[in-house]
Length: 302
Image 1: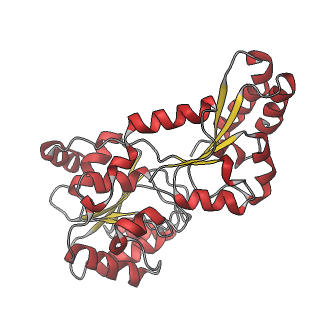
Image 2: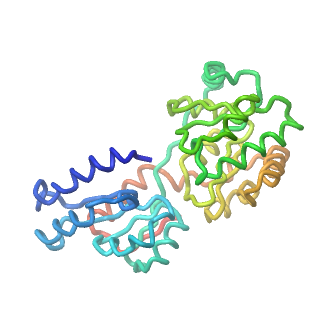
Image 3: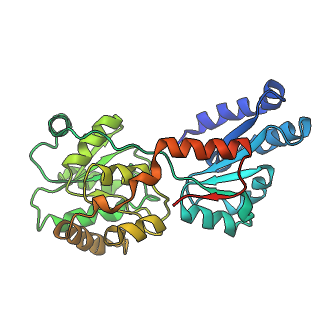
């Protein structure tokens, strides 16, 4: 997530959009997260439209079902809305967006290259060589369902002695529970690491954990499945429920998480059940360009 400084800097740029671009652009694609924090983007877009009715084409790109109800009025400024998953489409409809403005276009995704030697190097570099570990790649965040994973890991140590919960990302909500878990060797916070290192960790972990209660098709979960890792997937994502139902988070308490992780490890490998072809970059680019050019009125690709 961008910092408040980044958003403030972007707001300054938004204020100059109308003056800088005027009629020079055919389309403007805006990530929905700019509406989650205080922003002048709505006013800037209205100014652009006032100067040039109907041009540029304004398209909102929504990547999760978190668009604030209080900001729903801002969607009216856009000609079309791109949604990356079925639950995002449903959320936009619940906010009153007309179906003909909605386009379901998944995020583009290419399978990462597998490299067992690189994976072993990364584990050694980050102090995880030789020990079993669960991987959480959304940082120390309550919103992402992190804290029940601490006790779930402690429970699973009865089956996997020395099991570690390895965490990648920002430490937004670090507290005394994290201190205790780190001191007993249960939690290993790795901080911000490179994307290649995350891919290496995914190949080595027992299970990738993504129990976030409100999520869409996250790239972390896709990458876990793509490298053949076992994964605890976020709930309420229809695409995961349809294709990998046994791996979708059922409950968020620690005991249930521990039990489901055990089931995932004991059960069949379902990582290849997900249809990655729906994320082909060439198709995603074509569909997105069609929306930006105004060549379609409501599209869905499954």
